[in-house]
Image: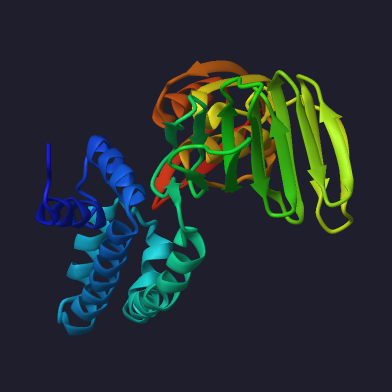
Length: 331
């Protein structure tokens, strides 16, 4: 079905106002990656929306009422103490936030969305995205990641470039090696499945082999990986360190399968942040060392939090885009 620009302008407006459904978000995400013109339209509408919000606050006589409306729309809950502080500063805060968006969005668009000639781009801006390349290779991109690839592979190599975090299940073709470039790192495979993260930690990248074999190179260093191997690339030192992958939740962001085995809360929080794209604030530090054993498959964050609250003495309360954890924990 052909859909004109008016349809997608409406879809963008619904997303910016927080009214879009999960299906609409998925459709919008696919549309954004289909053409750089779509991205330009989205960028312009997002800048206009931010400016309008700032002007609305500036010209509103009943500032408290306007903030309550905005908070309700985007799901912000305030504690009494936080509310008192924000009432004094929210006018300037929203104006500064709008200006910040206007300044940073153009540079983000250039950095993340510049597409080399002859290549397509897949960008997971709003949520995890999965796609199948022309050779049958399956790719899953985590939020905030991008992949550049040709619409069809020609020559003796199948070359793509990655920025961020992804899972690849490469279609076997002994005549054409599959090559992934990420900064100064290169991964060469014939047919295999593996995980790549170019933003693992500051100055590091990670590659974990799930099946098959890969040849990893970084500057003048090379390493072969076997299933279960984890390679940590130390960019600052130009080294590759091989380890055993011991993370059962490595691909939880893709599979939504989560396993905790006597796992401390601070590690659980790291997993939940990645899977559900939420921040966590621990109000009682003693909670962090409490341990949980549980398995989840496809459950919502709310369901996971209910299990945690029923297992140990904690309370989980939403506050904006964060979840606050309080209580006595495992005392």
